[in-house]
Length: 164
Length: 195
Image (cartoon, rainbow over all chains, first blue to last red; front, side, top):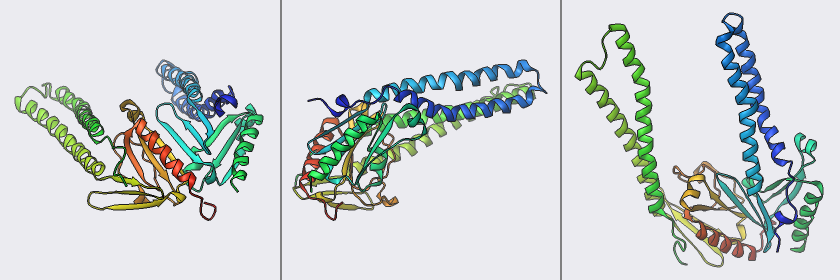
């Protein structure tokens, strides 16, 4: 039987969205660093400053986002979620792997949200939580499209209603 | 109730921690060497004479490095030994209704957890645990995490607050079997007051 991951997969634009999200902070820091280095440009000879400019630009604009994108592609590849035997299983991580197994009868709420980048890429994040703080951090499936997120949400709610 | 049905791999993780301790001691000494060498070179520039010219200076420098190496090693070994004792002290068992988790070296703790109160189970695998084929199982309850609930962590474990029993360094297959048993027993228990 196909897993939930196989039947309702994540969107292929998810690694790109994550890369942009994570690279924005680095880009802002690089721009501040770039502007800070411009100050001694007028007192020092440009030859002293130029290698530093090039290094910062290469690091911030090319190297880090490329590495981040490669990481996010693997992250998506290894992302697993399934619903079986009245439990929801979510497994994620590349270097450190975490797997959370939630019995359906312990789920407190199910909700779907989108941040600004999700809205730009048409992605939805499905969150389920139990009565613990850590479930909020670990038990979510992010990077679904609208149709898949609605289907999975309804499946979980149907299981919960079926318990009453 | 059978004690530690799936054994904690104490020897394996202690061996790993020992190797890490030696590596950290070497890194600390190398770091100090990098800090002191420029100072010794500057003495040569000022006096025109190498700081290592005298045998006393050379001996003093080597003695400092050896002291730093052994000091770091001793501190790390104490930590490894303490962690070894803690892991050896861990006792867990369960029957159809409750999960019992005990341990501690000087301060002892005992947690008895009805299956109806278990919210979910998390299997953690850090990078080093994955290399060693180990996993940790965390059984989460609805209780807010307090500082006293944080258990000892060694080099290989994420520092995460655990509200329930946290069984570290099981074999991967054993961790999965333990998780499946806990979930199946917990699913049979009805939640109380909607939790």
